Image (cartoon, rainbow, N blue to C red; front, top):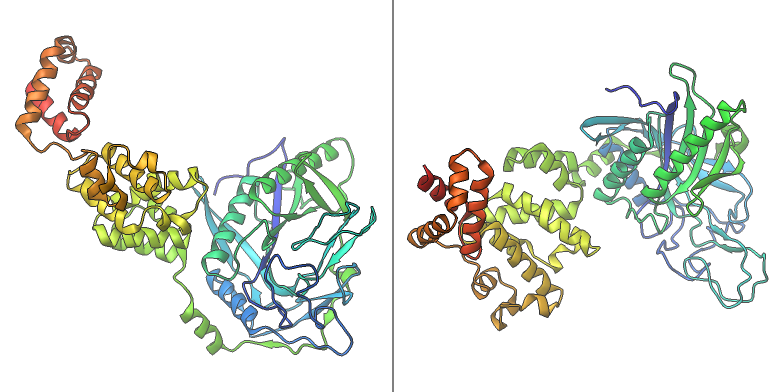
Length: 516
């Protein structure tokens, strides 16, 4: 492992706490729904509101999602864990406490490994515990007719008033806590992206950062190499990878400046303002003692038998790194290709269906990582939507036509663009030179309609090459004098003369033969 990169002579130390909203249909201790976007306070039942006489009942699905994460990350699943009350006052916390886990969490230990450039990094986990979310406070509502919150409040508020939306109260969360193992903002963002990939891959969280389903808190401190850990400040609720990097970089610079100017760092919770690019203190950072944790008397210990764990394990999807290893073994792919293709379940499924249909997995991989990904990015789409543009079957046919030398790579890109345009209803692009036959979007129809089939008549190609050599005697002389670029120019002129229909490899072979 390489040494940590220093910033102005200081080592950066980062630990993460990530709140992953679990993908259950109901809340962790009640039957109230968890759907995003409802009108304020329409998804909070008597249990969520902490009305007298109500009791929490554990959501089985939330427990099973915690078990899945523990199995995916090589953690220990506690056979017996305890729920505790985390006491603090805030208007959007109806009970005056949050039900969480403290001494004995359900998931203990584990690790997340990822690549940072060419180096493998591993971040150790301390724990992952189940807890309920709080409600949401929205401030300064004096805008008359507008709305706010997920569903929007109506008007009638005076300037400076705060509204409370309890729809999120009781939403199931899994808080995933790391050791302070990260040493740069790049490493922290790479860890967060990998964790995001894992929780969405196994389906325990939808990962929607804009809706608050995946929220990260970064604990940041700096120290001189070899010194004790510095005082940390916690940057709360980072909901984009871009802002995460900006916030950490700013916080590191700020802490170093404070220390260099002789001021002590005070432990605090801070927020990042993306408009100014700065962090600002929100409150002094609490320690566990400030929350006065004690076991929740309304909830019995959570007991998880080994048979339950094994049943969950048997029902889990194939993990991305396991699938990547299989892609290497079964399809002969390089590790880089396999790791890239397993970044999302949809991308992996699209590759596997294409590879099985065409029988040329490496060529399929090249196209998916290259042209398909490029086009999706350009249109702001992801692989969950790729079948709406070019199906795996269509791509497989295209790959087979390339492999069979029916079309060149250049022609294949034209066919791909035609398929994409037809699916996008871009008739102007799709039908240029295609005619009505191309409307079905079939690969072979576009090849024929656009006249993209490669030349298979070697005598016709020889005649073209002879004409090129005769017309470009100077390039021939330069090549024979040792100028390799002159040969490339001849290849280009031959391809142009064939209107791109010649097989480039065949052009190279015939040119070399004639120039020897």
